[in-house]
Length: 298
Length: 89
Image (cartoon, rainbow over all chains, first blue to last red):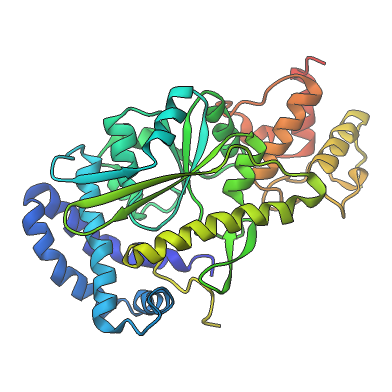
């Protein structure tokens, strides 16, 4: 399971990504959006593992067989957000209508000067958060991210905005989380995605869409050790030029007793999984984990 | 097996207690063995907990900017030497 998810970006990088980036920068969004259809079709036909991942997820989220059209729509939604990331990253926000829910929460948190963990997911576009939070409002946001894989979509797109790239805390080395702790202590909001298990990291069993799976334990364990608030964010793509960013408070502080740490932590991770499921039902085509999420393929 | 110095044993005890390494005795840790990945198999969450415990016990902060962190966290011996140099209590 560990490296499965890496297949999609790897496969997507040379063709889909380069093409989308080039079109976005040189031709423009209307033509780019028209070209997303053949690009999506190509991807649909040539990436069977992603196709199966999509079917599996949509079946659960929609409660029916998604069919080819459903999977097409799913991949198209993903491709559309990649196209838009190019605009978000280069600060071209004029074409977009971004509606923010729970805005006072994040504004007050930033005004307090106290750091926090911003816990997101691979549902929708976290770039929408960076566009609003970093580019427009200059919130002190840093992103904890796996950059080791140089073909990763994010690494590839980050080249577009070196200033944003500097606000990334790369995962790797024993002192990574020490850096997170220092950043939070200095008032940074540290963004981390909590829905994908990487390699042999610590996990917690949760129920997600009425079925057991594993979520990473790291983000919330980190927040507990650092002793800071946790705010959830979901950046949903709603079609056309519309995005929604939702902020919710998960915890003012996560307190864990050492002997019961794992079970107490599981309660918090389950709460995150429940909110993620809520938003994933609201916007199922925003689910960008195109792999065997519940590990059903033996 | 190579014996631990008294201070290395003290740091080994802190490590085992802080991280609740239930199946490891402090005196059984090999001083040159890697703490992370191979060897003891600690991860970056352990490193953070350990850094917080070291700061509480010995009165100084391990810093992420320190270019020597890989060396400092490399083994019990390296970590103990660093603590011995930096401690304020």
